Length: 263
Image (tube, rainbow, N blue to C red; front, side):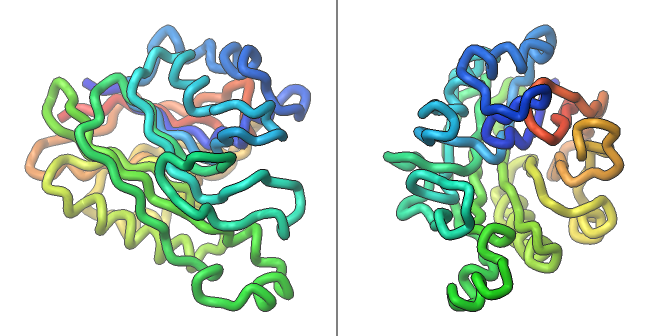
């Protein structure tokens, strides 16, 4: 059994105050997870070296708090991020970005034997920048990436992918199609985690052969929809996602989505 959790971290915004967490506050916010800590954690909206989040490597802070020694990060946006849409730009290099960045991460108790990063198509790649700004689509459809890993778990190799899809539903639908195709073709059981910005029905339509963890995840207080998802393709194994739970934490405007993966 492998415990898995996906969480949109919202770059460490504390729910009680609306301020961005220090390293100590971020660690304290995750304290409820320590009793049954996840073996695999997928994070979205993660800052690295950003002034707005005290220059922290947030993926490393979270991984240390939960004793997860193996961490991979993929940058979607590069440079120092401001509050305006004009301050957001695609990272010059995805993966283990050398400077300030913002993206997704995977932290694991198990060794990472392979990893890859794939930029996902979006309006920012299809439309000229003036048109994006004219219709205020720059932030809504900021660059998105897929971070994929293959983990050496006690039950065998497991592909785990993390992504944060567009807030423009048709684009998110196309991105999810690519994500499932990429991860499902690796030849091992596969788990897709993340804030897909899609509700249950479109996700079900694309992932009919995948197992899906079902729980409301947004907003964190009185959630009324599921946009955070765990999808399992067990391959030839009789895999399941059980003990699904939606976890309100002291950080983020999303709940964490947790499950036990059995292969």
